[in-house]
Image (cartoon, one colour):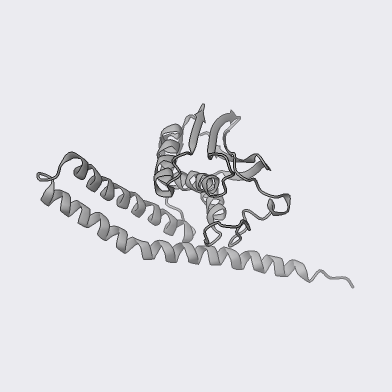
Length: 238
């Protein structure tokens, strides 16, 4: 009688990984809620008390602190609901070009990569949850900036309608992904073994994949070699 002892182990491992992802997202999001709430609250209090005494640049900086904290609160709440198995979606009409440029601008400032460029072609307005989709774009763009080549980082985005779906392609000119690793990049808690990169949980692309599932879409690695990588995001057009 023949048997395959590895199959049940693979199923259990996948289930264990899914539970670990949910616990990680729930814990991290929950722990961030309180400090983010306080940052937003104190920024609002300072605005109320000092608005008349601040110059234009100071006022803008304080407003930005409050807006960023409030945006982060919304994102962590969305991640908590996703981890709980019942994602709370807030779909609205989203200008993808504006959203992409905003995410890109934030990342360039945070990472200090001011030689990086973004090119958007034919990006439509679609109906989706902007908070969740911005996290997907942020992950792909931050990977492009992290795994850069010797050339200044460049990311290109384009979209094409195919039947009932939009396909949004995000391409970079980074170092590419070796063939041996391409099947693993969406595995939870796995990181591309590149020298000199920052440590992390290895959940970036996994989380992006889960977010897109919640939005009714998916993501795949469409192409990768020494000239860079291209990911294809599918989102429903309706």
